[in-house]
Length: 107
Image 1 (spheres, rainbow, N blue to C red):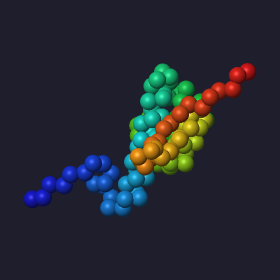
Image 2 (cartoon, helix red, strand yellow; image 1 turned 60 degrees about the horizontal axis):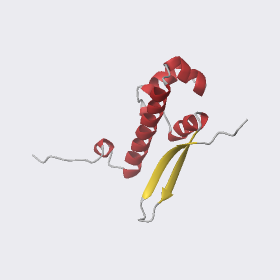
Image 3 (cartoon, rainbow, N blue to C red; image 1 turned 90 degrees about the vertical axis):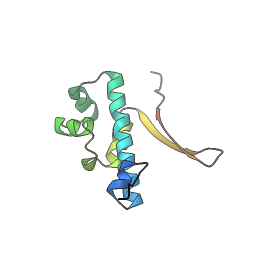
């Protein structure tokens, strides 16, 4: 019996590398959002109010239901919370992806 090993669980789910990359990105974005919510000490009701989404969607988000969450929506949630996704290329030709908090303008 052959044992298969994967660096990424989503590679085991699909043979399509684009689909695996999409699933991985959605998972990473959800994990980032959940970390932001925890850092801010937000309960589900606060998350829903901040993102202007129903509690059913909040539940899907915090439970990691990536099948119902698009990359576009997840990036939108980050933007609403004041964050920006910043991909770049470093000197070694590696793609670096950062989620940065936008600078707030002084009042």
